[in-house]
Image (cartoon, rainbow, N blue to C red):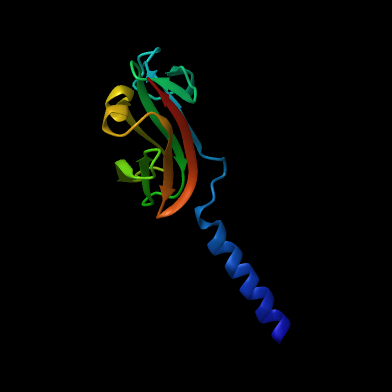
Length: 139
């Protein structure tokens, strides 16, 4: 009877582990802006412009996260300065199985608030880190 319980325990563990996995991987990046090119009100990947990892003080930055997790999941984005301090935070409950969360800021204001250098955007689902978007801010 012991082997049966071990197998059952392993199967139960796998189902819990896979609860937060997505059928397709989530996508996280930084860009300079989004323009609704086809005027349909939907965030299509091709409408995000200047996807990159280095931004100058004169630019805007838009952090974008495509989440594919169960409805009701708590999704969040936290922006950390080069010194490791938390500067900005955005969170929401995932209403649909596929959700886009974005946060935009003027780079110059972020640099003025802290400093130029490597900043990190941390993406989380239900308190667990799923991705980090690392960017470099320059004067």
